Length: 635
Image (cartoon, rainbow, N blue to C red; front, top):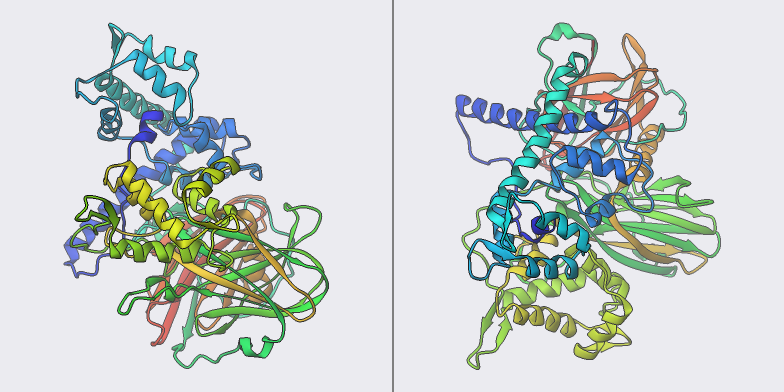
């Protein structure tokens, strides 16, 4: 709905509380959280099963995606649909759908009224049809005259050539709620589906669902060893089983990890390859409202076979003394995939598992050709964090001459932003680099014509925007709104800043490629979520490098576990013809930080499939950590 998209909804952060609470208060909090999660997943499932026969069936078209979103009470625009169904999308599974719903929230009446209020300058409660036609057919995602006529002809909220938008908002919200109610009623009628309903998440916090591998992974050789680490499903999350009697097979696994303070530097030092040819690109992980992580994706071209060294590490932007760089503790990794006949046919080559302090890297030989570099972070240390902010930072002020100017704090933030989006590090923004910034902050691109206009008004060198030009561009935006910083805050919040101008929900990084025999070329291609290619690569890396153990009493379920000095990752493989539900209990773990933030949960694994379980890191690297997990197959 256009008016819904006009409303600006303030971003919200969610995290664990650092304060101690009594047992009863904790129980009430957990109960409330479970209730909210239960309602959310019930609504997701109800909407999904209104259109599809099973939660294991995939959405196969953009039209089908639109239908399930509408059943969930959303009213997606074409722009929203294109955001999730790109030219590369072939299917979306239930977890993808849940992730989308967490991000695309329904508009409240307050938000809708606020949007209409921007048009109704007189606060009369009405908008003339002529003005409505003009706005809806010329701005944003333009509607046709027939579309607008369909709205203005409805007698419930139209009379005398005017639209009563208060009544319209009431009808909009009621219709949205009715869609959800109808879907739930349909679900409740079917007792078979009722047995598949989602329960609560028993844990300390709620995490966004990590997307599972949407295609069955290739057959892997079975490894037999006596160590098994815990699992965490990338698929549906269920509640704690009501009775232990529902479990027919279970395994207890314990892994004791030493402190990482004396970690050896296994990665080759850059000085050892300083004579090699090198290329570099920056990028960034961004944390979405629903907990999903998106980042740049890169294409690497090697003109000939060569030994290469590939590294990734967080980008240090701490130019101001005393300034905190929260993201420097975030773990980073790169998965290297070889492009064969097409982008859809990518083969895992390796990943950056060697470590030197905060840098992770890989050294080996690559043949000539095109490779894809997919950045990854577990999310263990990159989550929504609730902080107490004394007051909103000031972005602009008026000088003695009455002219607007940017505050010192805002200029410093803009310089950091410029440093982050200047991917090639040449001190200038190309149109391609600037468009990644635009896509992140507005969802749109700047075309050549608009770039030419920008060149006429702002400082550029060699057709690239300078730092000063970037500053002036933001000052112009402030002037356009007569000093109102609302649009500037939309930009800052989308780039991971909070209202204190601290970058808490973004993690900039830098990638270096060294090649012994040729000049490597790297180029950022996308800015999006990891997707099935990354998830499949993670699965393969854990299967190839980790330990495996067959679940007692169920030889078709295998858990693969891969561990380094600082993290444990596990993958579940279901070889059977039927889905399996696995209950996981991590309550006995100590000094552990999970990417899901859950201690007890259950996952549903599709037949003949493999999916990422959980990633775990130490809460305090300077201390020993114990990973203790009991996982059980439910009846």
